[in-house]
Image 1 (cartoon, helix red, strand yellow):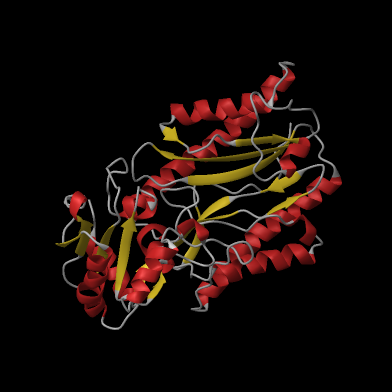
Image 2: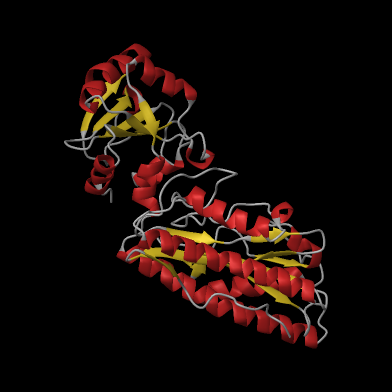
Length: 391
């Protein structure tokens, strides 16, 4: 059910005049999801749902689909032509904004939330409406967790921390038995563990052996490549409980299919752990000082640390991403380079911290999930990986 009060509170906090939700042919999945609308409903004409910080929302719908927003609260205005739509924007929307900008689903830095088309933006501007990105509003609505959402995430995180040692035990026993273990066998074992615990995922876990671990988004085709002795084995698994509004957990662990990892590997992993834990210390220190860090400056700290350790050329991705109902959610990302995120790590924010370094012969990534709780960064689910898994 739509929580109108929560939307209005977010609009007030971000000092916007209102928030526009709009789509055509269901293209804006965020609007549909936040408004709890059926994605399969007929949507051949644009509709517009405007929430203001106070008062009733306004529905602007086309004459041939006038009932499309009937499940939502608010007044309804009907248009049949572009001229009528423009007049409604000037006469019914503009005055209610009180001179403040209208938040819309777009961002120059965060393309994942950019659903508003340029044509609609021009129509809004022609009606005298100024706009602003809804990124901060989306963070408050999706990227900041309530108590039930925290419980949902925590349950999924605990399960993932139980699955990792089970998966490593499967690797050990299979290789000891000489079963010709392949990456896909480990992937399928993890998926069976998901099913046994009532978890679901949007994509199978990453199981990458040897040089394949140097690809951050490696995906094994079929049964994948063999898992060879004395090689790096990267595990990356994410899942959530099977409920429409459940929250994901997402972790990565590094193993070595032998007893004695080489010194270079041990040194690289130790540096990565120091970067991960250093990020947590950086966030904690800033919060104690009363200076809430942004996702961008947190990522920059990790990048500088790894660059100073000589691993600048080995960096291929951001330090972390927001987590909510999607594994890559609408909240703050720890990113200063790919999709710079200047939003703040507010109380209730959930995000991954996953520094990674990648070479031609192997790659390493250690990932934990972090919740800002009582002004502190807390790792969820279990104890972070400190040493490489071995035989």
